Image 1 (spheres, rainbow, N blue to C red):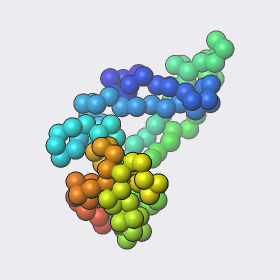
Image 2: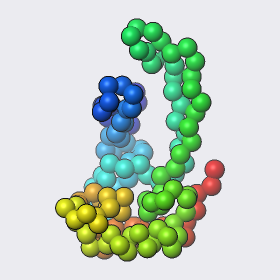
Image 3: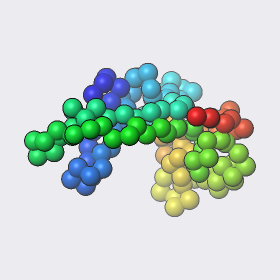
Image 4: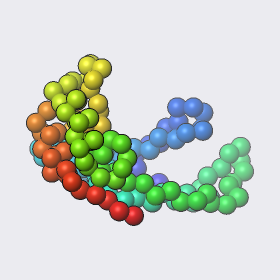
Length: 134
């Protein structure tokens, strides 16, 4: 583990692992008010597993699995690597909603405060038209 990761957890006995990022690490996003959002900064990432650090029932992994490349781009809710009209329509449907509302979409809550408001819109707007390539 690096100093960027918090404690990992598994919701299903080790089949799936959830990793969180430590607020203040070089990989976490900050809101316009300077608060950490707990989310990755926009960018392209490659995840690689060191097989010598993974074991099950005392047996170490025989070989590393293939690396996985993924991206994080706030507002890209359909995973197309760009922010376009489809994303805007989804944002518009979620705008003004709070976490108890079924129409609330946490993917658009940039600062994680439970409300999709003008601050979140400003973050979305600043990325509109942006495309990531890898």
